[in-house]
Image (tube, rainbow, N blue to C red):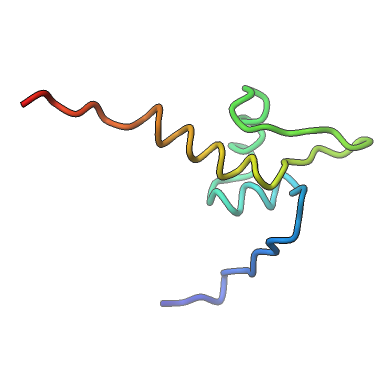
Length: 75
């Protein structure tokens, strides 16, 4: 497997740039901004900067897993 494109994740970061959050979610920057704008992905403003709390990324994924889980067919 080619791992040259993978970057190390700094687990000490409290706030992520939108680009870092997008990278962790393996989505594009534009899609990440769309999720922020819709309120699906939490973000905050620090001065003029948009930041995503690091813990908002796994919370977003958890909500996706719960809300998009296929219904189990009754046997």
